Image 1 (cartoon, rainbow, N blue to C red):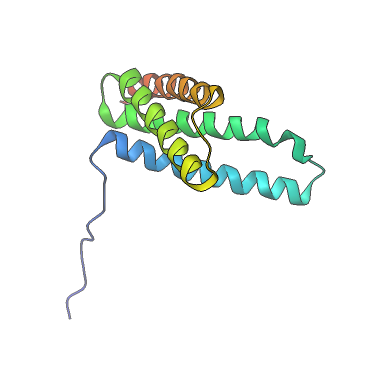
Image 2: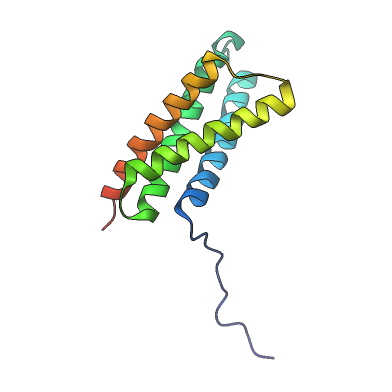
Length: 129
């Protein structure tokens, strides 16, 4: 038998899809961390909206960073589009799962996600060697 010398790696070529994947993974990780904080510490449930906004902002920032780094140029554009796509995905999930409609809060999430993603994308482009 011959050993396998080279294993092919899966790499998403689209900067937007890879950034969105990183954003969703960061959101899941942040949610687990906040859940563990609620269980093991004295953190009150009344602070969950603040933690939720921080998780979304950080997730979109990291996704924008990855998207900008993979794109190599126009980081604000790729990060901003990623933030808008992230907010749209959350809006669709909220509509389908919780029957939430379009509101001022969802538009604020869209604007904040766009800004956070654009900032991450600009820093991601400039972090390339």
